[in-house]
Image 1 (cartoon, rainbow, N blue to C red):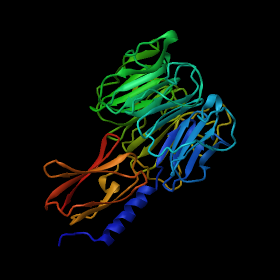
Image 2: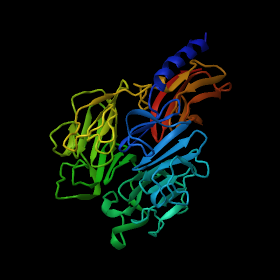
Image 3: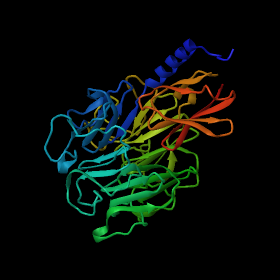
Length: 469
């Protein structure tokens, strides 16, 4: 008997796994609050509301069906499931990129279709995007040459920067941008004194980098995170590097001191290679290690490092003693961390806007801050969408298989399925829909034997599974 599980059994397994998988936040953006897309494609938030009242518990941001959410200061963009991009919040200096600086009381649609968009970053008055074809576009404020077209004129409509089509990812700091190409190299432009533009670039009048310029010719940058004036980047070796403003210790280097306020040269924060996840936003950085411990460094003026000492840390220090942390997300002077079982916690900051999500607002003043962990009751959770699921939670496959390989896959971002034979030869490569779906691969002509399924996303392998014909 070739099939050892029936389609009925497969269906039951799928139901169990996808119920668990779907009880989560699918896309997350952080600033002075937490903003996310639910598995039912709602846009939710707590904290600052770009349009309307701030909320201290999870609340619907906008009704509709959405696939992603983007945030920058007072601006929020939503990408719906049809590919329409919606802008809400503050439109000063053309932050919406729609040709004007008008004030809008509701979300407005940008012209065009943005399905397959690779990257989008926002600030109060600025936006930058990599379209599906790999082209780079920017708009909004240009005082610090952050548009990247060589001028300092405000752009009310998106302008294309150069002719390259190999842009991969965007990261925004204080009036400066870092962009990564498909080959892994890092480029940047804007205000060099923000700290995130390295010594590798040549500067012109007033210390501005007016067009995209090479920051690092290295091609082994696996992941990047950028805050106000901090850049963190992990090499494929696992070592975590940093550069930028260091007046609060946010770059995490043992040799750094308060007197050296900007470190333009990228360097490892230490020799550790077991960093699983990391994030930064304002002046504090966070990371999770493979052993499940949570770490932080930088500004601790408002308990951002999970303690009430008020003392900044120039090197990574462990936050608590738990060993079951999985992900961490930096907000403005606060953070959200997620455990391996999906439980969500927030900590740090003064909570003026309800950004801790614990149902309260701070009405006392900055002398009251919140270093302790708050468990957050997010409807539909505790499970959080993350690229660390076991393969059985990403795929369900009829195994062994006969004339076709039939599988169902969970929602994943920019993922593809690769199928190899037992010699390592690639037989099939299939792009997977971000919303999840089913896939059938014809295999009638394939010989009996062992095959390998592998799921990749954004340059990383999420898991693999052996299947038999």
